Image (cartoon, rainbow, N blue to C red; front, side, top):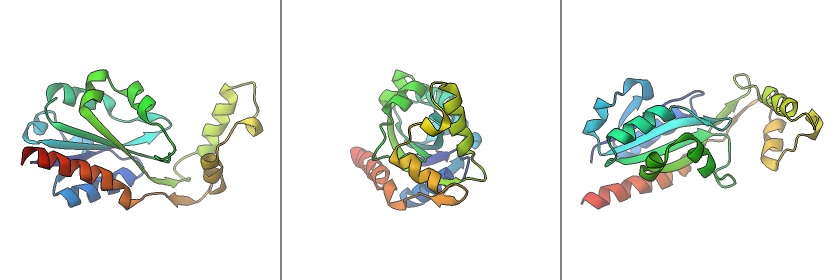
Length: 181
């Protein structure tokens, strides 16, 4: 089976996961904006990596189009963000970004990335949340354990990447290979 890993990155974590996955499965590796819909005709397994920031998945319109044109391909999406995949239900996020047809054909994974506070203004986001919810002040915004941990590292670089987390995606690729053998 011919495979490709396509990625879009904001802070670099998605690219590092995409490169590692492509190396492990012997796949081509291309940046999102370097792939046309016609290019995808040659591939059996298409893995797309993108960032998930503030509840937004980047590049979803193009993914919907690609799957509409090639629904019989094996499609996987991995998102990279700060949320802990063991504590977060990503299904509502996927449902708010993709149409039902896309979700039927897309197998999803989530990996943790790197946060560089100099490039991401978490405090600004928390202030906006408090401002939008005028019943509370900034010191009354509820924070879970994960957010408290993030705030305690404010101003530093935190690398939450876990190279072992790609095992589930690699197993999915193996299963696709085995369906054609």
